Image 1: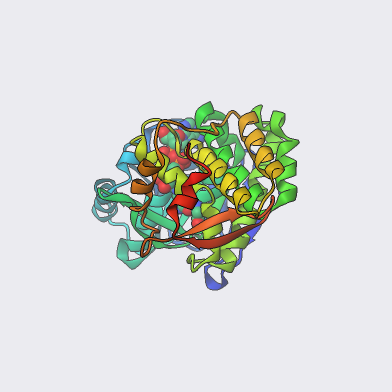
Image 2 (image 1 turned 90 degrees about the vertical axis):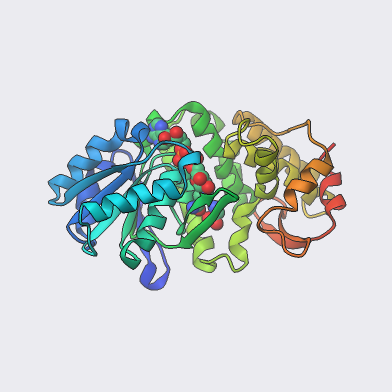
Length: 359
Ligand code: NAD
Ligand code: GLY
């Protein structure tokens, strides 16, 4: 079993447990944390069908009174109505401050459950049991929680750290192929902006990653969590440095918006956005043509898209100017510095930003 990690944030520190088949120890892990006797497991019907029973049984066997809260599956339900379903349930069932929540699902469930926990009775504990690759390598760690507003994604939220993250790689066995590959885009991101040796490891592990070799997947997920933890420990509330994790995301958000969230999964848009950002980094002299070529080639070998045509630089510009991170016409943009390093620079010249990447 891969060794556990601790995210070191003073009194908000917590462990990430890794292993294959460890979800059925969830009850025992929670018993060690003194979070109260009542637990509400928040999930959706898709995830519950596969993974609800072992989690429910493990928590029950450990002596907890277990409640199940289901919200509909999908990004379009990461909203106020679903949040109210959770609040209504918790209030009607009489959960009090001696209670905690379990987020059992992908990033949507993790984000909304964390936000519910941060606000219910002014804050009760929660733990994350992420079931998608994206959630295991990114969203379950670091404490960004929230919901979407009709005027934009993730506009309502809070920084609120979980008390524990349980990463069971066997949960990925039921994940559809496209979702799994999409999660690999965020994996590649860590190699590009945080760790060149990890990028090399990914280049040499393509076959194993594609076949979901269990040791390789677990090692990869653990490495991503280690890298994410070190970023979050340095800049928990995204004062500046944490933004390196947004590499490729400014373009990705524009692509998702231009295609009305219907053509690409998030990781697929991130893959294209990373190629745009790499080309830009190359044009600025921060990275070489070979670096860009290696990024493109790794993404292609992982069956991820690397280009997107059909929209002009004017289309991109109009959407990007509405990005919530734009301030006074400029944006803090993440560039890769070679492979394994990054820098953040304020960009106001949109022509320059777009000319090298959008034909
Ligand atoms: P998701 O949660 O919608 O899950 C994708 C699909 O896979 C869903 O249909 C889900 O029901 C299904 N699924 C989940 N686990 C499964 C399993 N083991 N077997 C079979 N099906 C399974 O999407 P996601 O990609 O996990 O997360 C995307 C969300 O994460 C977005 O809302 C995004 O804003 C958020 N996010 C948050 C952070 C953060 O730091 N908090 C970071 C990145 C993304
Ligand atoms: N997913 C980016 C972050 O957690 O900051």
